[in-house]
Structures are given as structure tokens and as C-alpha cells.
Amino acid sequence: MKLNGSQILIECLKEQGVDTVFGYPGGAILNVYDELYKHSDEITHILTSHEQGASHAADGYARATGKVGVCFATSGPGATNLVTGIATAYMDSVPIVAITANVGVSLLGRDSFQEIDITGITMPITKHNYIVKDVADLADTIRSAFRIAKEGRPGPVLIDITKNATADLAEYTPQIPEPVERSSGYIRTEDLDQVVSLINHCKKPFVFVGGGAIISDASEELKEFVDKVHAPVADSLMGKGAFDGTSDLYCGMLGMHGTKASNFGVSQCDLLITIGARFSDRVTGNTKNFAKKAKIIQIDVDAAEINKNIPVDVSVIGDVKEVLKRLNPRIEDHNHDEWLEYVKTLKEKHPLKFDREALTGPGIIEDIYRETKGDALIVTEVGQHQMWAAQFYKYSKPHTFLTSGGLGTMGYGLGASIGAKIGCPDKTVVNIAGDGCFRMNMNEIATAVRYQVPIIQVVVNNHVLGMVRQWQNLFYGQRYAQTVLKDAVDFVKLAEAMGAVGIRVEKREDFAPAFRKALSLGRPVVLDCVIDQDDKVFPMVPAGHAIDEAFDQDDLEQNGK
Image 1 (cartoon, rainbow, N blue to C red):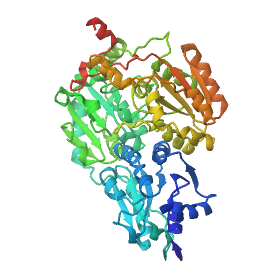
Image 2 (image 1 turned 135 degrees about the vertical axis):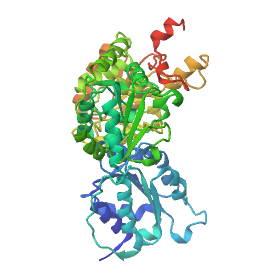
Image 3 (image 1 turned 90 degrees about the vertical axis):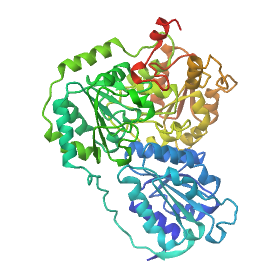
């Protein structure tokens, strides 16, 4: 049957099981929105306050559900406003399909009104991108985009469609999408043999887990693997929830703001088993001194990550779940009680600490954990509050901690939390922000109110750009250049002006009751939590130093600083 391009687009989205799209209309994409209007009973469109909010919402939806997130934008500035969200998804391997419209083919290359080469702009930050100038190519392009977004190491794909291609007619034949197979073609028996051999001969193994274990849904296989190897576990920021954070074997996050137990343990181990992690600079610190006593195994779906940042002794290339399925039957039950007892002493000697009398970021996170019984979906912006959320909330399940790890995008969390709540309506969704991050995209509170999406927005408000100020305090002679935000902005009044509930909290004992109230209301709520401007995230590894040089407040005081 013959359909126009906009009809083909909607039919292809339905083929892919898309039920929600986040976006913002404009002239070039009007044909698509007109057709979407006719299918509003099948595909829900969420009108965000800004296109960046749409891209982050699609990202949050994808991370929370495991599905592909979809966002729409028009040409020119509409398309360019998606760029930060696309880059965020690219750095964290999140499957989204961004669909933009461009001027008609006859106007391309003429600097036409709202014309932009969005495929050229996004080439470095997408797995693949397309410009569709002929409607006959549209259906196959959409199907390819969804397959590419999901297969192997997931990531964003952009489709730019010229306006004529949204209106012209072409033959359309429905198709049922073929399932995307897990990547296993490069899993070699000899690599598995080497892994088993190293495990059999080690005495002090340590398992390091990254986001790849979450993407591949490998939590069950990971637990079986860890139990058999009988090893302590650290995770990356992106790996939170892949391994149960309440387990006795769990030691905390690794790296710049990781626990001393994890940092010291990895520095002392004789075998580091890295599963679905890419050795980010925030994890490794000084690469020359990273895990220098250990043989290193790396399991990853992306061959490009092997030996990229850290040289490894053995690698297995393939989907983490598939690799562990093949490894687990070959691994005998090991006993490393003496090593685990040593790591336990590290945990006891170096616990995470904070002031329990004042209202602080860590105290807020602990109260949220307690009030949600550890069963919330936590989203964050980027900065001190992000690290506190990673350190003090115990993530026991995958897909429950959503944050911008690779790009470090301030302004990510609010849009992402809206997408996550729409994708998982039965989950409690909390976005934790600093006041600097909240300012960046706080207009999305209006979106949450418009659609009555009952997210809880917690603003850890220290009236400064906290993480940057921390560096200025410790390493830049306390020269606070452009990091002080003391002004007349009132987040409670702002929330009320947008139709949300605003509550200010200034004392530790007042937070839990305020949060319980927010849970009970079933409405968008903003909690403005005022903390001290000089609260810091500890432990900390200075830039360029080894991870076993992590220090905290006690170390500073002992050194007279």
C-alpha cells in the first residue's frame, strides 16, 4: 500500500513497539506531528520544555526500561538542541533514536531558514546517522536505525528526514522486526581457557563491574560468577546495581571518589577481573600505577575498548551475559577466606563518614534510601550530589541508578527522571540535583506538572558549584572564581509558580518528614535542601595520582590542612 513519509514513519515506530516519544514540534517536522496526532491513542507524545529535555527524557526512558528511547525535533536549532543529549547517550552506551526533520531537498545547501547539517554535526557522537532525501528509503532506514541502536554495544542513532520525504508517497509493506542477537561471534574458547586458568591460580582476586553488565542484563550470571570465584566486588559509576550493593562481598565504587576499601583492595589484588567496564580515567587514576600487582582480565562487547586505556593480560570479546554463561560452568568453587578477611578489615578501617548532626548530602541520601526501602529509581545530575548518591544509596538491582557518567552532563537528570517515570510508572523516581545543575534545565518541572508525572526533585542546595568549589578549595588556593551562586532565586516559589509543590528543608531532622510528604502527594515535588557550601565528597584521589593515594577529611586533619 502507498503511504506518505509521515505515515510510514509512524507505522515503522509502531512496528518497533514504540509507545512513547519525547519531542518539540516545528515547521520542518509539521507533517510528522500531524500524522502523530492521528495516532495519539497508540503513541504518546510528551511535549518537553526544551529539545534537550526531550533527548534526556528518551535517554532516561531507555536506561530505566531497557527499550529504545525516541525523541523528535525540527530542523535547525531544534536539531542542535538535541546534541548534548545525543552525546550523553553515546558516552554511556544508551540506545536512543533521534528523529529530526530538515528543509526540503531543493533547499538543502542554500543556507535556508532553519537549515543545518545535523548528520555532519552528530557524526562523532552517534553509532550511525542518516539523512533521508527519498521517501522510498525511509522504512528501511528506520528499521536499520533501531537495529543498530540495540545491537552490540548500544548507542544513539539519528535519522534526519527532509520535509519532502515526509510528504511524498511510497510503497509500504509492514514487517515484524527480527530479534537482535547477543554478540557472541568473537567469544573464543582459548580466551575462556586463559580466564579459567588465571582464576584457578590466583590467591587475591578482585571483580570490577561496569555498565556493560547492566546493559546485557547479566546480574544473575554475575552473582553466580562472583560466588564461585569467591572475590570482593567494586563497581564503576555506571555499574551501580549490576551486583547487589548490600552483599558482604561488595566494597563500593572504584576510582576518584571510590571507597578506600575498593581502591586499596584493587591495588593489592593479584587478579583483577573487569566485567563490562572500559577503564575510564575517573576509575584508574594514574594508569601506570593502576592494579600494578595484578594480572588483568577484561570482558567487554566492544573490541575497541580492549587495551585502550589499560593493557590487559587476557580479554574476552562478547556480550557479558553470553560470556558469563559460558564461563560459569567451567569455574569451580574457590575459597579465598583469608583475602576476603583482609578486604573486610579495609572496609571496617575506612568507612564512609559524614556529619550526622547537620543537614548534609550524604545524610539526605541515607534518608532517601531508608524511606524508599532501597526500592526507588534514583536519577542524578552531575557533581557532588551525584557522588553522594553513588556512595550512600545501596543499589541492589540493575536499571535503578541513572546518571551521566561519561559526558558528565549538568542538566541531565530532570528530563531523564521524567522519561524514567513514564517508562516505569510503578517505581518511585527521585532526581537528585545540585542547585547549579537544577538551574540548567529546571524548566522541565513544567513538563512534569503538565503531564502530572509524580517525580520527586531533591535539590542539594549549597549555593555554590560544589564540585568545582571543592577543587578550588583543595587545589587552587581557595580562589572561588565564578562558583558562588548566592542570589535571589527561590526554588520553592519557582516550583509553585510552575504548578509543583515546593518544600524547603534546612535541618537534618526535617528532611525525612518532608520526603515522606512528597512520597504521599503523588504530584511533582521540589525539595530545596540547604546544606553548607563547604561540604565535600570524600574519599578523593587527586588528578594524576594513583587510586591508592585516596585521601579523606581525616587525612587532611592529620596532615594539618
